[in-house]
Length: 189
Image (cartoon, rainbow, N blue to C red; front, top):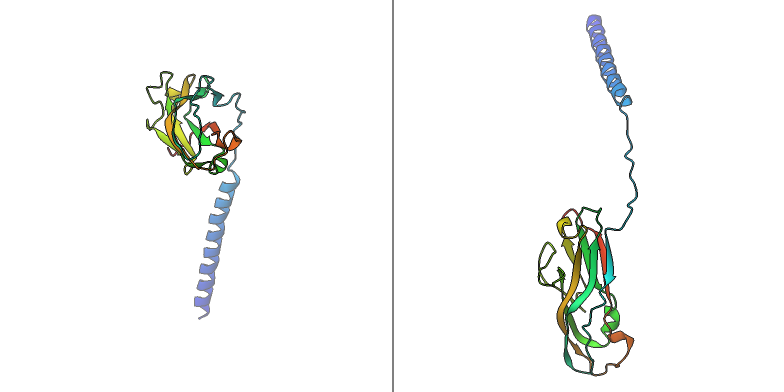
């Protein structure tokens, strides 16, 4: 019996030493791993410049309880930076929909992202989008070939509305206020 206990003790000691040798080797390996830092520089310009198109004239006259038509025109010019070669997303929103619901029973516009002639859509989907009181924003994804160093145009293709009978003519709540923003396009699109 004494011999069996001695052999078990030697086996246990051997297993312990083997485990210690293996784990110290792993510890030494992880100790030798190093890190590095990637240095980034701040962008020198925006992805694109957005400006109001001064030729935009889609005005309409309001009367109470009337259906009407909204004209067409280029609302914004979006010029891509020459040095940014990535895709961008152009967000167009109705900034005062909360005010307009007091004056309009229904209000809707069709928005496109086009070339200067307003005949060719330059976004990836190539479809007309709708902005309304129920859906006050939309977006267009533009690949770098159509925006880097070029200008795309946010074109209002028309729309329609119906006012409430109690509309206060000439108030500030009846004028739609559009907002346009350009961001880096998400990689999932």
